[in-house]
Structure formats: structure tokens, C-alpha cells
Length: 167
Image (cartoon, rainbow, N blue to C red; front, top):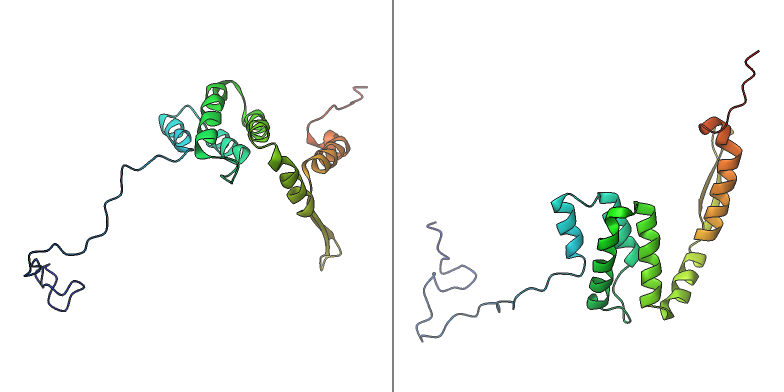
């Protein structure tokens, strides 16, 4: 085959324009593409001054588009957060982004809290060795409580304060 569409090809013209002088049906050429609201995150990553962890925190903290949140609102919020991103760690940036999302979409706070509440789970599995595995998903407040309890219980084993008798 010579690279031309043959008579049996998809346009059945053999690569030639139609004899009546009209142009074949071509898909419309899209207008200038508008960059998505999160494009500045990609640029900052490419420039090397924003870490992947911070980019993930921004994306997850600001959330997705919905009826109340337009791309323009998220782009404005993102621009403000990117100016602060150099001085904050990923956890702080996530919290700032989540607070900013709550300010932008106050009506959606209750729905997000209900979704977090409804998604909670706690499962126990007894392994063949007799050990018990626990897997859970908690609302943020409950998770913080459990993590602080875990930290308090395990801190001596994880580099916490050690009381050593030198005698």
C-alpha cells in the first residue's frame, strides 16, 4: 500500500477529493484549548520548586469541580496557595487548601463531612497464625485521636524519651 487510503478505506475516496468539489467531512478543529485550573501545579513541578508531596496536597486539598466551584474559583485559590507553598510543608499546605475549599464552598462542608462519616469502617481479621489484623478508615477527628493514642503508647519504641540508668 502506498500510504493513501484506498477505495475500500474509511473515506472510500482513494485519497482524492470528492468529484463534486466539496470538502470531505472532517472533525471540527477545537478552539484554543483552555488550560485546566490545576495546570500551574504542573508548571511548578516542572520548574522544580514544588515537590510532588506538595502538589498532591494542593490537588487533594482543593478537591474537584462541582456545581458551586468553578474552574476560575479554583484557579484563583490555587494561585494564592502557590505563593505560600514555598514556606509551608505538605501537611500545612493540605490544611490551608482544605480550609480554602471550605471558604469557597461553605454549602458543601456538610456534604463532605457526611461523606467522611459514612465512609468510616473498622474490620478485624484473625490470621492463621492467631494474630489479629485491624483495618480501618476514620473521620479526620477520630483518626487524629487514634494516632495520638498510638503515638503515646509506642513513643518509647519510636525514638521518644528514654530513661536509662547509667549506674
